Image (cartoon, rainbow, N blue to C red; front, side, top):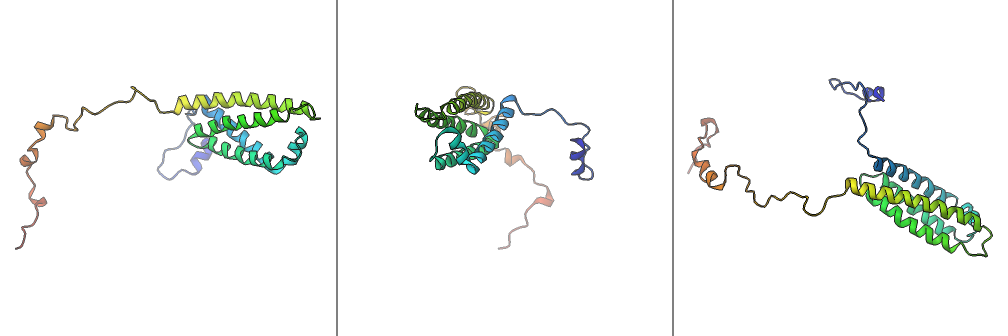
Length: 185
């Protein structure tokens, strides 16, 4: 890593002797992993929806799977963005849609019911991770509401008070080289 950092270094910039610790917390790393997972799953749903529907016994729902793929890619990109909370909460909402869709496919006439049960278990597990990631990033990066914010209503901007500042400009002596030229009438 330090060699890569030093390649792009301009003359006069300090050399990177060793990389420092990452400022990413556990929730940030989880958000990154879930973002890439979401993009990968979305690409799969977008590129091979027929395979997904055939494996789940949901033939004829290819358009829905493609739409879910677009949703997954969008959520993944948001999860990788600076405001990853939006992406993670959108993943949680998408998990709700996925669960509802899989529950509808769990009917007794579905010959691939076992695959649907496995997919449902996987989605429930990922939903738990999404919830943990969303709550963790919200706690870590969310704005605090309520009494934690500092209030500056009682401050005037004058460290010695407004009365002391009144008329202070009159006492200021303007250096001769900064004086304006006399006005020509």
